[in-house]
Image (cartoon, rainbow, N blue to C red; front, top):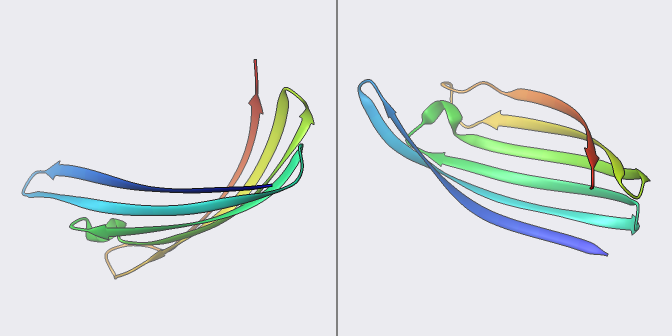
Length: 100
C-alpha cells in the first residue's frame, strides 16, 4: 500500500525592521511492506523573504509497529540552504507513538 501527501504552508514573520513571509511546499510518500512496517521519503521547498530559511529538505524514514498500539519511527533529514544566510543541517529522529 502507498500513502502520498502534499501541502502548502505560508509562514509570516514580523521582526524589528523586517516583515515578510515564506511559502513551504511539502511532498511525501510512504510504502507499506506490511500492515506493521513502512518506509517513506519526503521533500520540502522553502522560499520567500526569510532568506536564512530558504532551501530544500530531503528526508527518509522507517516505521515499525512493535504492537498494534505502539510504533517506533526512525528518520533522517537533510536541509540544504539556498544562500549564504542559511546553514546546511542534518537531523536525526527517533520517535515512539502510541494509539489509544
